[in-house]
Length: 440
Image 1 (cartoon, helix red, strand yellow):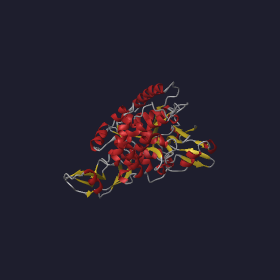
Image 2 (spheres, rainbow, N blue to C red; image 1 turned 135 degrees about the vertical axis):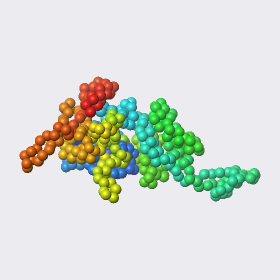
Image 3 (cartoon, helix red, strand yellow; image 1 turned 90 degrees about the vertical axis):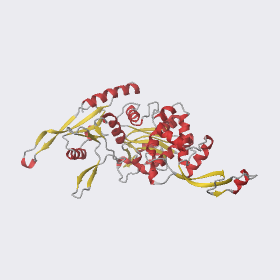
Image 4 (cartoon, rainbow, N blue to C red; image 1 turned 30 degrees about the vertical axis):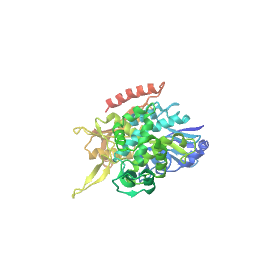
């Protein structure tokens, strides 16, 4: 077993990756959008579909004789090779901070330890099972997947194509029924059958009830429409879905779910090199994960527009004709209209918050009539909060002075350092969250 551990947003000598040549060649200088046909799952899914290519969308970049990681973190496996990309804000042997973000955003409990998961195929399956509810919800927001299916009947109400061989076999001597098949637009199709088989597979595992509890309404819908379900058909359904991946752009969420279901049901085949997708893993955009985590803390006091899925969009300008232009997505907009606050979640150290970050938040503050702004960042160095007051006047006239009525604060959430275990880390994080919220 070959394991390489690196931090996100860090640079390492290319020689250090010699032990994992297959993983390196699979991801080096490749955008996450090119991972479509692999066994790699990316959070959020929309990272794969963005038209603008940014450095944050690459897993590993070559810079001279060195390799540089980006905001992407998680784990990748290829036969005996393994790469773990940890959070730069964690210290020690265990990346408790990354685990804590995953637990709070995706509700994946710490029983799935990313640092030991690669040693046990069964634990890899557990991790994919825990992300199943997320993908199921994402897909079913588009409604139930509907597809043409060919169904077989044997009655006297003929509506389709007569099946001569089946008719002779089933209706001799003739008693009035006709064997025929009919092409129908149905919910009871190969995709929903695959989901149903995955649900039943998860249900039988010890953690199954807890996993499916968060999507019980979706599970109920799937069970109601897959009336032809038979557990003996699992292999046939797997083969059929492998041959017919969903291609329609509208159902891209179902394509991701289809891939996940096949990964779960085929289990070890992908991980010991027998399947066509030898590379596998789960990756997270650190900036997205941090932003969604902050939302779990401040959602009662802030609106949260989401540029990844296009919800809650705002416009900077309006024309006389009534059209609105200048699409923007502030991370957080305070709900208090009398004292509006604008906040930006930054997955970066305090010293890296500068320049364009300042212009962005000030533009949002001006647009929403706010005099208070915040940067929410992970504070792993016990750095003191920094309050910045807007200047007025210009240097040419030598009248620049500080305005105390408009300010922006770099507010860090302290990341515990010295901890005994994950339980201790989690306890200290809860304490840090209370101190963080008290300052807003």
